[in-house]
Length: 542
Image (cartoon, rainbow, N blue to C red):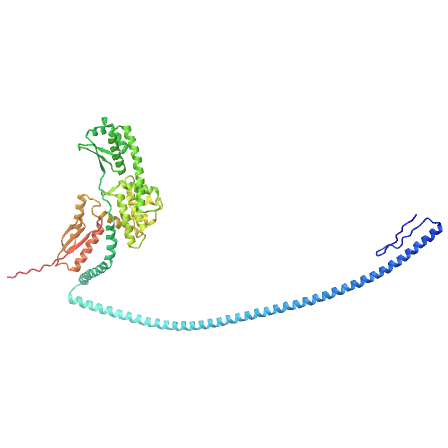
């Protein structure tokens, strides 16, 4: 039997001995154990020697590492010191540059301050000189004032003495002398004023003649609208007089139903072949006329049929009103118009003023206003808009209180029309002050439209009254002998006494008559005042 033994211990000790052991006798066993012990002792000594060697070598290596670390640390310290020195030098150089820059800036500021100080010194010297001059001037003015007061006193005393002497010579009182002087001065000034007025008028006429002709005559000649003359009645033709009885109906029930449904008066008299419809409202009058024509054409005339046709006709007229208003807006090229304003314009198609269709009149005023505004280098589109809407109040003045300018202005204000348009609507009859140039433009265009031949009609009484008023105003002046209103009241011929009036005074009289007519009368267009002064020299030869 063999026994395997491995002896070793500690670090670095290898196996020492492997012995085969057989089963021996005791002595052999003792000798074997002793050998083992001896081997162990040898191995211990050997391991101890090896450990010392290893420890010595480790110490050498550690000392070497420490020396290397010390050398590296010394190198790092040296390197850090060098880097710190470089940074310190750089900072010192930067600080030196900053200090030098600050010194340079301070030198420049000091130089500017020195220059400003020199300038202030110069200004101070100048102000001192001016102050001395002002003091001298003030003393001079004070002396001059004193001298002037003394001279004024002397002049007053001299005038008083001369006044006393003159009063003693003329034997007149102060009031008589003043009155005589004022009379003479008034005559001279009046004569000079007449001459001056004549010169100014002539100059203004020469400068404005071409411009005024281009604006007014061009506007009148370039546009001409149709003339419509109608009143508050409409005539409806009937095929025979038997139709009158059918329209009246049994015990008048048809005509009562017709008048109640349409709101008009039907006049059936002895006039053959005609029935007259009378109403102040032009739309109701038109509805009644169309309804009556449809009933006559249909032949079935009874209250139910009348109401049916009236309803249909009213819807037709309302649709026609919208179409006419839309057509007017398109024709006048007016953008952004509210449908309610468009409807009111359509109603003007059925309204007349002095026999002139109000919608056509408004279209005419719109175009004339645009022409005038274009000639004056203003906004022609805005003037055209104001001209088209200036009489829109006439579409509602028959069923609302107030004049048509105020009604139209308030109506258009609800729909955010421009302020210039509102002022033109409310002020085209001078009811409110004009705040924009478009208001007088619309006033002029309105007068041109109403004054052109055939546009409107006037009653005979009003026409005669206006002629008499013109002649009365002209005859109110002293040197006037005769006055005649001619050309349908568009011109006044005035004949003056040549012995009491010279040429300059005749000009002044014409101006005064024109101003009085303009301030006291209302008239379309313009009225020419012509003053005639004729001198006749007659001698008899015997």
